[in-house]
Amino acid sequence: MPINKEAYYQIKSELDGKAVLVAVSKTKTVEDILALYQEGQRDFGENYVQELVDKQPLLPADIRWHFIGHLQSNKVKYIISFVHLIQGVDSLKLLKEIAKQAAKVGRVIDVLLQVHIAQEETKFGLDADELSQLLLEFRSTPSDWSNVRVRGLMGMASFSDDQAVVKSEFAQLKALFDQHFTPGDFLSMGMSGDYQLAVNEGSTMVRVGSLLFGKRG
Ligand SMILES: *Cc1c(COP(=O)(O)O)cnc(C)c1O
Image (tube, rainbow, N blue to C red):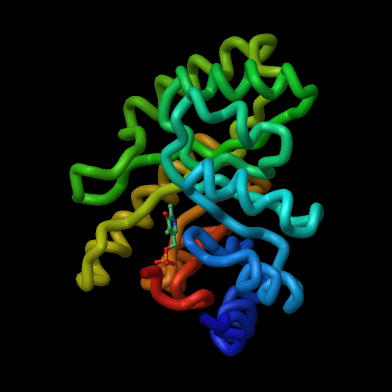
C-alpha cells in the first residue's frame, strides 16, 4: 500500500515542531518505511521484537527506532544494540534487564515509563502509585543506573469516541508528567485518532501509524 504523503505533511505542519512524530510502521514493509524515510522521516516505531529485528538491518542506519509496546524482559537483548528509545517500560524488572543489557553493549538507553490511563483493563502500564514507587527506587540508587535514563512517560487513551474521556485521560498523564519530569523530557501520547487532542493537552511525542501507512491488515 502506498504511504499517505499528504497526511504526513499535514501532520508535520500541525505539529509544527511542538511534538516529535514517531511513524508507527508495525506490520508495514521495508519499502513503505523507505518511502517515508525519503520524505525526511527518521523516527519509526515498532512493537514486535522479531519484526523490528528483521527490518532494522535492511533499512538506513540513521533511523531512530522506538520500541513502543510491551517489551518482554527476555527480548531486550535483541534490540539493545540499536534501539533509540524504549517506550513502554512498566516494571522495575524490565528496567533492570535494560540496564544489564545496555551495560553489556556499552550504551546508555533512554526509556519512557508507560502509565495506564485508559479505562480498558487489558492495557499494560503503571498506575500513579506504582509510577511514584518506581521512580523513587530508580532515583534513590543512581549508581545502579549508569546505563539507563528515564526520560518521561508514555500512555494510551481509551479507544473512545467520547472526546471528553480521552481529553481527561491525557490531562491526567500530563499532570503526572509535570509532577515527575522536566520540560526537556518526553510525554508520548496521541495516535492516529487522537494526536491533535493529545498535543493540545501537552504531548511532546505522538505515535502515528494508520494515518501514514494505511490500515493494518
Ligand atoms: C499501533 C500503535 C500506535 C499507532 O496506532 P495508529 O492508531 O495506527 O496510529 C501507537 N502506539 C502504540 C503503542 C501502538 O501499538
